[in-house]
Length: 417
Image (cartoon, rainbow, N blue to C red; front, side, top):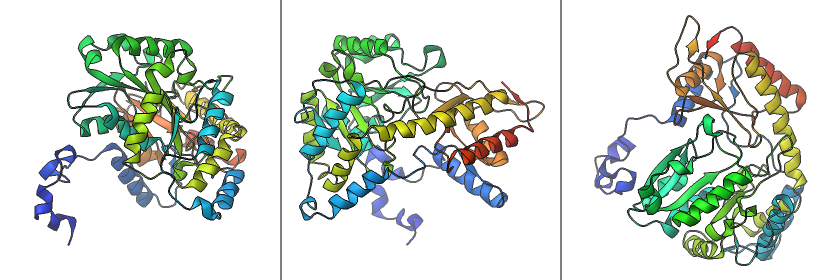
């Protein structure tokens, strides 16, 4: 039977309200990433002989370091690593604590009580609302941003309050703009720096203010830091936990997906306040049985070799330089970020004497449809598109070719800003 046929059975009537209830699957809205997927497919069909340049992919374009892969193979062959990992192995927790100290200058983290592994940071974000949110409680999220913690806040009966990230405020949330009644009801504040999608970086001064605000309002801070080690042009990696008092109010989520090209490996960790880590561990223990021990040991090898990330960051920095230069030659106002592999650019208003763009999505669809260049639009706080420098290219010459091809394709139109 097809899905449509099953919609006429009792199954359609018993879905949970949190995913749509009896109307689940009947929503005719087409969401952003599905629109991009469909537009890419249509562009490939219309222009089968033209290369589609994908600047929208939010994951690394290369495999993990050969040493990490070799370590996985070695550990996967050991019978003692075949069993459940539950809440993690001591070797990984010790490696994570040492990594925080070496790369981020975070001292005094107890690997036994203040670190627990996670199967990537996405499941950790999904579980944290179960630790804190009761019906009617509030999670504060920034937009544009990654919505998982907010989705699960709603799943357990909580509410989401959004704070816009604007260029005028360096894409940092204005904590003073949060209404007093929201702050009073809030349990969680979600932050993410270097930021997806804006590429913005936080400062010690900002994190210091976050700690003060959190203590004043008795709110838990969740800092999602998957890009924290990918920094450029002299900016040192910054951890929220390096700021005095941070461990009193929150936790930080780290992932090896972006910084070690280990997206599909699904390994990360939660670090910080020991009571939060303990509670998260209890919830986690009822959600999963831990990541494969061999993956944890391979990840520990990676954490002990942060020069792997430094090499990856050099590549992204180089690509950012080339892409920013190309876009600015075309009339955009692009600024190289100090971290992450995302470049967040304001969309033009339209084409001189031609098509108008009323949103970032309209411009993004134009780029795919007419120029076979894929980006991701963001219209939560102004009309922007996100380029990612994780495009497919083997070596410097190929990187230059891709950037030159983008410039060539966009050179035959004059954009209005």
